[in-house]
Each structure stands twice: as C-alpha cells, then as structure tokens.
Image (cartoon, rainbow, N blue to C red; front, side):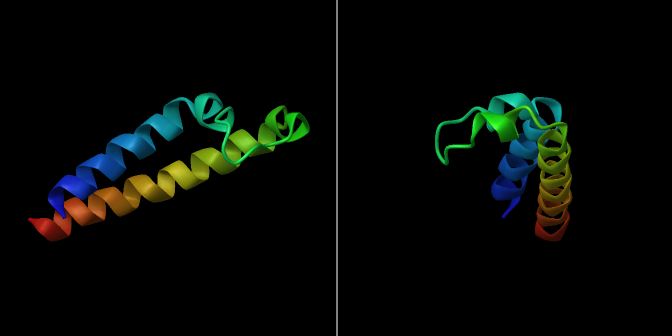
Length: 63
C-alpha cells in the first residue's frame, strides 16, 4: 500500500503540474475543441488534486 501511495501521489503531482501532456494522450481521444477549452485544464487539475489526497492517505494508512 505504501508503494501504491507513492506511485499515485507522483502521478497526480504530474497531472497537477503538466495537464496539457495528459490531455493530449491518444486514448481516449478528446476532440480538439475540448482540448482548447480552459475548463478542461481546471477539471484535470481538480482530479489531480483528488488523487494527491488519495495517495497521501494511502501512505499515511500504510504507516
């Protein structure tokens, strides 16, 4: 659980810092109109924040 917490936290931090990279992944395909929408970056950062919290909770509970 400790390793999973670290992996989720690191991945989520990258989502928070570089949401454009994750928006341009090919699967699932996101239309170009949505890629240019600034709300998509905000939504992706919110998901990243949620996963950071989940990762930190996994780390804390495993200790």
